[in-house]
Each structure stands twice: as C-alpha cells, then as structure tokens.
Image (cartoon, rainbow, N blue to C red; front, top):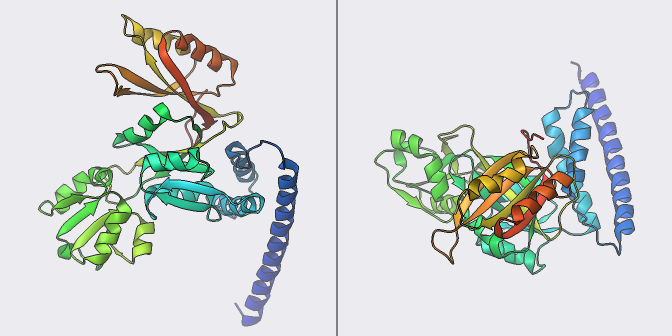
Length: 362
C-alpha cells in the first residue's frame, strides 16, 4: 500500500473518530436532560435492567465487523461516564485494589465510578447502609469452592437489597518478580485462590510452602517486596505491582466463576429475566423440607440454588437461602413466597434483580 493511500485511510479514520466524539457529546447532553427530568423524584439513577437492555439491543443489531463481545466493554464505559454526569457514583467493594472483587466492580460500573475499597464484607454493607456509598459489591459464591458465608450472614441483619449480580470468570496466574519457577521458595494467596489451584501446586511445586493472606492483592504486594515469593493473583494485580507471570491459568477447573452481588437500598423494577433471592427459617417438624419446596413446585417455579447456614443463636437450627427464577412482583412468585411464609419463623426477600450471563430459565 502506498503512503498516499495509507494517509487517506488514516484521514478517514480521523473523520470517523470526530463523528464518534460529536455523537458521544450529543448522548451526554441527552443524559443531562434525563438527570433534570429525574430531579426531585425518588428514582434510582443506576438501573441494571436498562443497561442490560441497551447491551442486548446493540449486540442484536450489530452487523459487524466490530466484534460483538467488545460492545459491552465499550458501552459500559460510555454509560459509566454518562452516569457520572448525572451524579458521581460511589461504589464500595471488598478490597484492596486489584482483587477479583475490584475487577468485578469495574466491569459492572466502569472506570468513571468512584470505587472505594473496604477491609471487610461488613464494612461494605455499612458504607451503603450509612449512605456513604450508593452501592456495594461483595463476593457470594465460587463455582469451585462454594458460598462465601460472611456475605450470606450479613443479610440476616441488613435491610439492603440485592440489585444486581456479576459473574466473573476467574483465572489465576502465578506471579513473581522474575517469572522464574526455580526461584520460588514460597507461594502466597487468599485461601480460596490456593484451594482453586491445589492440584497444579501439588504437581508442580509440591515441596514449596504455602501461606494464606487476606487477599490476592496482598499476596501480589508481598511478592513485589520479596523475589523468593510467588503470588497467586490476577493480571490486574500483576500490572499494579509490576510482576511477571511465572505460569498463567493455573486454576484446577478451567470453568471457574465467582458470583458477586451488588447491594443497594432499593429493589429494581422487573427486567423480564430476573432472579429473586430469599432467606427463611422454618419450624422444625416432620415433612417440613418437602413443604417448604412445595409452593414453588406446584407453580412450576424454577429453583436455581438453595443453601443452608446454622443459626448462631440456636444449635441445630438453620437459615435457608433460596434463589428462584422470576421477580417478586410476578403474581405466582409472590403467591409462592406467601405460601412458604406460613411455615417459617421468619422470611426475608433479599432482592429481585436481572440474571447475569446465560442460563436463565423460566
């Protein structure tokens, strides 16, 4: 290709970029008008179902060649920047920076949100409850290691609602200063990350001591300070702490996902493809397990998850956590929950919110 042809093509790209910039500013002006229209009303300015509808509409109408999987990432940042024009959005998350919870928060809210790390899951709840943050992001379960009990326990006393969920594919890298396996004398990480890489560690570093730390980011920081230490952490942590990848993707299960919950004060409106989470404690009597599921079975309501946690106040009694397909404003969902309530010591609706990812079934 001649230099003159290349210059023409680059000029054409510049012209298109200018058009994109004009359109972004036009969009921003409309967003500001939306903010004025909402002024004085009690509406939430962050609406997960609206974002989802935007992404699905754009992906469904994309003729290419721009990759469909990149549309969400591009428009996530456009929406994030637009929301910051309406109101600066503060989001608390289980920190520190470069943990997988931080990555999940960035994917959900974009880089224009003010993401504030917290030292514990209770601290995330407290920031939102006290109005110091609009929303919070906490882990709730991993596809390999199961539920995060601290998160479930917080819902027992908190009045916050689940307003969205995030599914993040978890890929663990072994990081060190040099990137050389033979120089590693210790492996450090969060206990769940170590557990998710147990087989690889046993096969490749069987005699290397392991140490539990409070987060994968704390592990990366330790590795950055000691060239004999390797951390199991994310690529984001590698970039933040200037580490090399000694071995990538060392998780035992390649289909490794962590589910995160976004917590807020108000329940979202139905999106058409929702999940409802409830918690309850039942009377201890013969046949109660059957009767607590019957209200959903007879209405053909799909239950996608059930967990139990022991009650701290009473030995051998349990709190159940249930996820089901549908929104609490759906007539059959609300009727089933009221049926269940008659068998319960207590029952609390934790939230109705759009499904994340694929796999939802009515």
